Picture 1 (cartoon, rainbow over the protein chains, first blue to last red):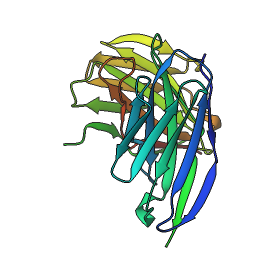
Picture 2: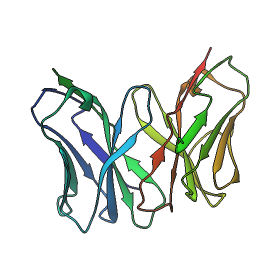
Picture 3: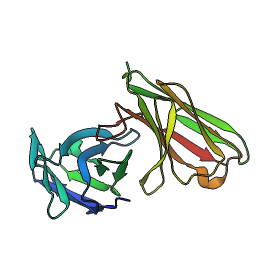
Picture 4: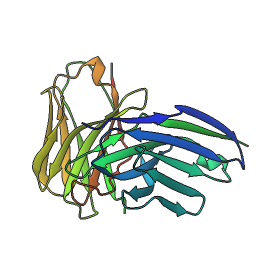
Length: 112
Length: 113
């Protein structure tokens, strides 16, 4: 099956700086890569996703890049704000499968 | 108008008891899931139902039994609760089981005394 690795496990940045979280996957058949944000006491919420036919996608301060050759994808958050503090999960979905394979999560802290 | 709702939000009970967690989605999705999140925040899929049919059944003790009375509901029943069952359980739904965003509920925190 698919194996998704996520780094770093914890990340602290100053408010206004950028944050980057990286994930690698093992199965070249993976074709859908969502990112989720989980705030304390809440369920994971989809913040952005990308499909394998696209190399980059941007939504205001967040962007995701995908390198299919290297099998890695990254989440970029610019101009970070304290409300960006949360746990972020990447995931990969195989075109022939029925489930997401989640990364192990990154706890992001934005210091005011 | 919560999209995926779970009840109860908190569940505290004794070892050996039987308990149920309910999940309902009003998104019109045809696929629903149960995940377990441990203290290290790892998200592990337990079950998935598509149009009321079981399509994923990961290595989960048979004390856990999902039930899907219709496409909008997927309940989780747990028999003979053990200390290791303490975790947060999330329900999710999606339209189709492949390559589609999953929408999560806010979780049920299960604590076994």
